[in-house]
Image (cartoon, rainbow, N blue to C red; front, top):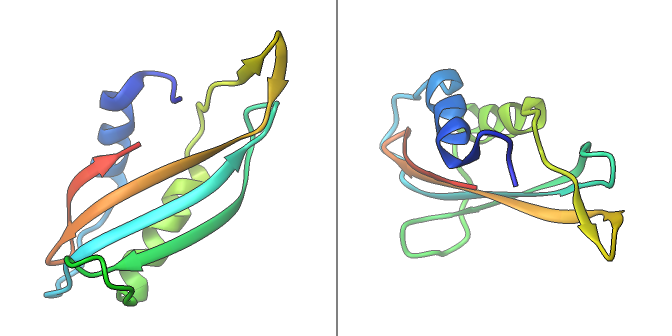
Length: 105
């Protein structure tokens, strides 16, 4: 969960991401862990075309989204039975011709 909710999250990426001039479209998913202190780490990148078949994107797209994701602050601490816990977070980006079409936290 992110402080400021979905709108703050979307605004961050739409403001910071620099579109790349390319015909590449598809999905980029970034998975990472938010620890019990709200810190992030262990980032993984998964890329797929519009038919969900694995494929690489131009590094100018994937690297940029990865770096922006690592810089993002404001992840909320989750608890279970009153104790802070680590959890996985997924960020999903729909890319259309090098532009972000949709952002899903």
